[in-house]
Length: 258
Ligand code: MG
Image 1 (cartoon, rainbow, N blue to C red):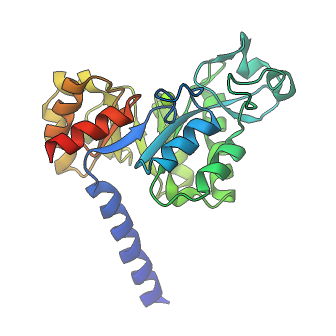
Image 2: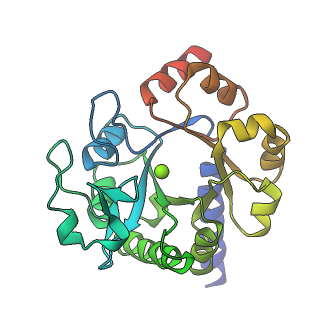
């Protein structure tokens, strides 16, 4: 039994080292939607990111008034505040490609199909009703991901630090990246958060955080990087992930640098 446990911890270490060791891995921001004019956060945009074999695809999670977890960027969907609207009332409106507003369950299920490369980067939106509601949404999302056995292929990001801490309490292993840009890599490490995913300008203001993150094995990710010059700066600084609306352009820049 002890040997088995030791083997498991070695395997976990390898998984973590592998995910940490990625350099300049492309994350499609709200899926790969732009080039093909797909709706952001649609199943089609996720599918395209997976078909492009991108290392990551990001999406945003809200909870409806009647506790459905749905994928949308804004707090509103067709002028309805998602947190105050029932799921059945939201899905009366289709996305621009005819898709139904996806649930987290549908989104993750699609994310598991024919997918060997693409990490599902799950952003939990802070609640506009209360901090507690946001944390409950996060824990419900973790449950869905675990139930679908997608936890090894999913990481969580949030602007709300308490949401990430709430996830860490129930899941000691999952990868967590903080978005707000107001904490140093050492500070997040102290709270067992293993990544910083900040606007790229934050790292230009705090270049010392890049080395601090590397020294502390904190994942470096930057958003939302759409210009070639900014991409080149992050590539040169060997960020683990780069989140972009322009995965095709970033892919070109990466080829150019080789
Ligand atoms: Mg997002």
